[in-house]
Length: 437
Image 1 (cartoon, rainbow, N blue to C red):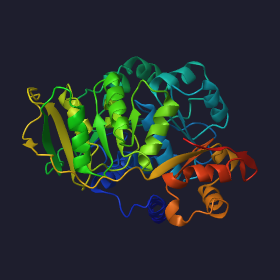
Image 2 (image 1 turned 135 degrees about the horizontal axis):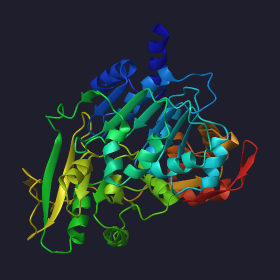
Image 3 (image 1 turned 90 degrees about the vertical axis):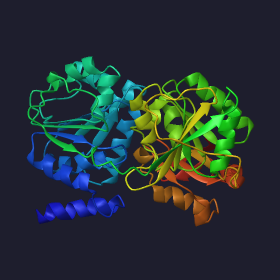
């Protein structure tokens, strides 16, 4: 037990976390002693760590097969969990597989069998049906954001996957809502439920209405972003066409932004989030796909540019701000004659005639054509930029290291100069291309 506690402290230090929150503490304790567990907790409260910590304790370091399967509803959530687990430095191999990336890449990675496999149901079922690895040692099944999986029609795939897992002895389901019944094929007998949704009584979320005099709300959206000032936030739209219209308008008015929707290629979605995380873009224009299951920092605000159609969408959009102990604001942008849905209540109207100090884009993102599989580390990249690029610590922003590439935030004013200096440099034994993303 002492060693177990020490290992947990080591992991928290690596993740820069001082201590587990009450939900995580209870989840770790319950999962360790229970066969079936349901974790209900708001978005942003750390459910990923709550199930990964106890999962470590049931893994067998001698096993050469997959021991745990994590099913998720989106590619972004699969990538996020994979990144969190790798940051824990456990020594166990983990891989994420999902639609939108080449199957050949999956096959190469799965030749070196991971202890934990994460994936979207369709891609996992494809691997299962083609017997690409043994399923006999998979004893832990985790359904993360299970309500979303069932909502977007993965029930057939999930049923097909679970039917091929005869040796499951631990099931963990997580959700930020209580809206979906758990189907019988999950075989979740007498689960222990950890419910922290009811604890979210004192909300630090302010909901404010901004009225547009014109049915076309673009000018009012611009006024609102300038009123808020230099803070990162998400503008939610219902339709991809709306995202394109908003993007064109913000570009014309020099507002640094990026877009995120299901209609984009996976590579482009990942790069949009990278640019948003590292500060290259201040605004993320997104559909409800960005309402949960993506790895982005705490937002001070979100904007409902188009009103959500259902209460659940409203809750999840708002869940991107005022998370855990932080304060946040959800702005509801409505046309003067537009009626608010019944579920949007107790909102305060505000005047946005004042403008905050709005600074232009500061960061730019550079792409590097080498990553972890080339034995390249963040330290190697930082060293290249310090020594050969001549930048100082304040000029080197966030470095994101992927399997086959990396991304670095640098000041916009010196981005082109750095590309000229560093393109075709060597990192470890690899000559890398460096370009502006």
